[in-house]
Image 1 (cartoon, rainbow, N blue to C red):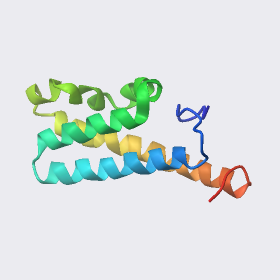
Image 2 (cartoon, rainbow, N blue to C red):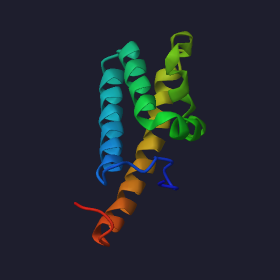
Image 3 (cartoon, one colour):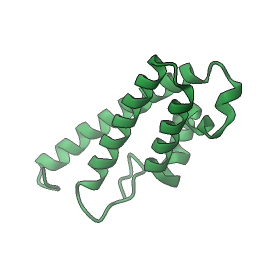
Image 4 (tube, rainbow, N blue to C red):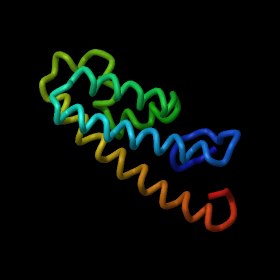
Length: 114
């Protein structure tokens, strides 16, 4: 188990990195959708992030990123939701980038493969 992130240990060493990269790509998509005013698309991508994170991490990240949890429907009634989602995902993105730095150290130490 990756204690810091909440991600479960995968069968292959590259899976956590792939999960991180997928979430970062989805965050970029949400930012693009926000600029285009596509709120429903933002919610769709936010639900995809929740799916990638899985239940254990999603529960922890719902405290870090509460707007992510609202992507199931409450967002339509809240005109501030898009901005809150962008702000929350900025924090999640920073968290992931810090973890990627930690994973790089592990990889350099020979605990994984590049």
